[in-house]
Length: 257
Image (cartoon, rainbow, N blue to C red; front, side):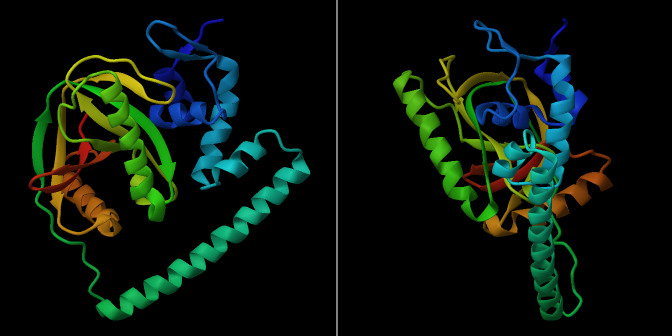
């Protein structure tokens, strides 16, 4: 039986590598084999059907607890889970439609996205300690800081110094709605050991397109939408998005292929 690398499996089932790592940590979709030396993860072809079902349920915005139950639920129990989720979606839709109406009335029809300055830079290759996380938008900032504290503690325990500002990576579109799935990354000066859900990784040099955000996290989605439009006009295709605090302000951007 030929196993699939995590990248190959991600492409076959429609999930990001970050999402697969998170689901493995939650015992939802674990790799068949993990290389003890490199830490590389491999999946069996028989797991593709389950992976595609997880991706499908994820696109529905199903909470992690319900998603886990769905994979082993009897048909009648699965139907009840989906009915409850349908009710939640409808209630959420009604609430957002009401909010949209209120905002529209306040703006008197002026709904243009803010203008953003599209900038480019090249990140050098870097060594990282990283950890995946998932949280709803109101709880995201606190959850991010908890993960960052864990990464900084691990770097301290390994006697490795940080090599730059931390940043968050978000699979395509993840920051724009639903529970936010992220990879919290802390650059470090030298190789070190991970621990549990904390991983050491090497990131290749990459070009990014970004803008500086002037508001707080609540308006990230608006700025990302405006940045996506500016990138499309420049002929770029947005991929994985990122956030990073700098002395000049908060960078919101996308990694370019």
